[in-house]
Image (cartoon, rainbow, N blue to C red; front, side, top):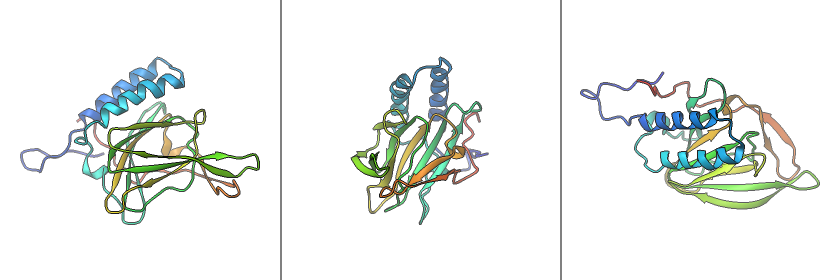
Length: 203
């Protein structure tokens, strides 16, 4: 468990209070059993509020790795209704082409991310269907219903980029897929998380 040190003797640490407010608000929304379009619309507004200011994410969950992008768990709902994750991309780092199998919301917090979307063809292969850049404060969505296969990369060559991802399940233990776009061949994977630490939202 991540603990914040005494402010009198330690350098200032960002407070997780904004993340706690987001978790509470999204939990209240999901408690009403809304349809996916409402989750993406209203949940997207909540996430936009969270990423509007880059002053709350503890540095332990914003640290890049020199070789691999990092996926830090910030919160996992005890009923597996959703999870909140910070993705940290070093310069030049990117994902393989992959899916999620559940709805997802992505909010830009720091830097600049590029998402390349893929569409499956009749022969099973994938072709690029679009590309977009996510900037701090912006929010986008994915799901099997609206488009679920993409590649994500840091669009900056000289600094890290960070985004906050919210998924309709515990994404670190969901069995999903990476794809070879040319053949369409799929390989199952479970991503896990880069750290066993999570913020202590109730401290």
